[in-house]
Image (cartoon, rainbow, N blue to C red; front, side, top):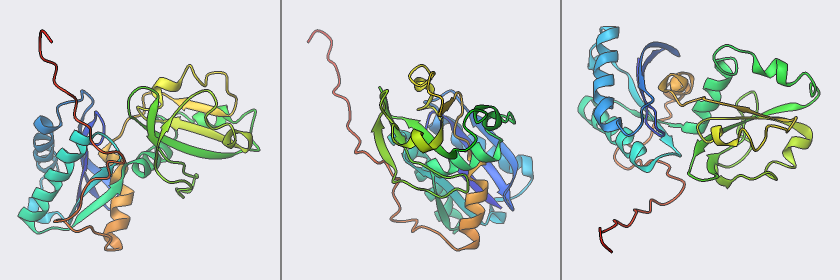
Length: 243
């Protein structure tokens, strides 16, 4: 069994998986409560499955990109568990996990969005574009094919009405994740771009990727592993009242 931790966005999510199947899941969409919730969720999924920590085979953590603070909390927690139990650490690309979840869940809560949106463009191949909000009109994103092949580097993109102008000529793009929610009005008249609203990260989406990594002994060095922030953290300047 593998314990999966997802804290890269406002979602705090913990899943216990066995042979790619999720057997227990806890998550909160409230944001800003990762430090408070994550250890509670871990304890709850372990108790629900009625297994001991020694029965875990590995710990998997979403490595980013995403929130600096959220990623630090998730990775620190995962490392602590690995050290305490002498278990291997698996790092999962957050955007890949989002795409896996999007495809596995039939394009948003078992509604086949793909069949309806392709009715006028069935000859076009599909590209799946998970997006994590990076404030204003910037997102962290990458492009994937339907068979989970990553066809672009992970980038911080500033989105405007001209974005994806080349891609949409020969492909139908699916944009999803908390970074895509703010793009609905921007692309509402684009025939070959579909924005999926309210799709959020989940540790459940890490199940298949974590199992594959475990079977292939694809582990990271617990001591030296760091999250993939994509951009350097820039702390805000405190405001002093009266100045």
